[in-house]
Amino acid sequence: MTASKLAAGNWKMNGRMVHLEEAMAIAAVNPGPQTEVLICPPATLIAPMAQALTGTHVRVGGQDCHARPKGAHTGDIAAAMLVDAGASHVILGHSERRADHGETSADVAAKIRAAWDQGLTAILCVGETEAQRDAGETLHIVGAQLAQSLPDGATADNTVIAYEPVWAIGTGRTPTTTQIAEVHAHLHQAAPQGVRLLYGGSVNPTNAVQIFAIPDVNGALVGGASLKAADFTQIIAALADA
Ligand code: PEP
Image (cartoon, rainbow, N blue to C red; front, side, top):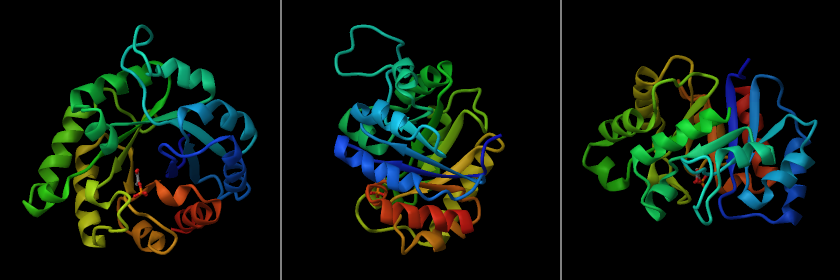
């Protein structure tokens, strides 16, 4: 049975062996069965982190996978390799990958299928740029990304959707609670029933309580603030209390 809330940390291109201590400190605080906790470290840390966290409530995920199961794709990682390393989830379609690697929603859909084939839960990211928000296109953009990135077959067990406004990632800026509520209500209507909806973009211990009080926000995808156990555990506690 899937927990109703999820706090997921995206470590991006941060973390070396020494930082496994931070993951252990995150695992030292158990928020209870309703709140799932996940850390997505760089690929080099998935196996050692999964091993270090064995027996704890914290699970480990990847930050990307290739659409193909194996082959001549230098530098890429297959979904089966993530599973082999101990991952249960994989972030797909993050705006940094869409921007840095030119990933289209069709690419993301193929990756989600590959992840599902290996039993991974896909965390699909959608979100508008600042220019798109200013142009009044936010709901259209996130709706189109969802429709084009999410293949048929999504369920509450194999998929999580993260609303991440591009302009809020790593900037310290967040949408208003009304703006987040509007997008989450839209996604709630459009997403398959029961799929959890995360908000992501500059979540921190100070704004977490307010964000988790918004209807249809079932958790967070956290970048910078997930790197420090002291901050991430406060966010996890706020989610558990929401
Ligand atoms: C992210 O990259 O998914 C993210 C939400 O980053 P941050 O929390 O640092 O804005």
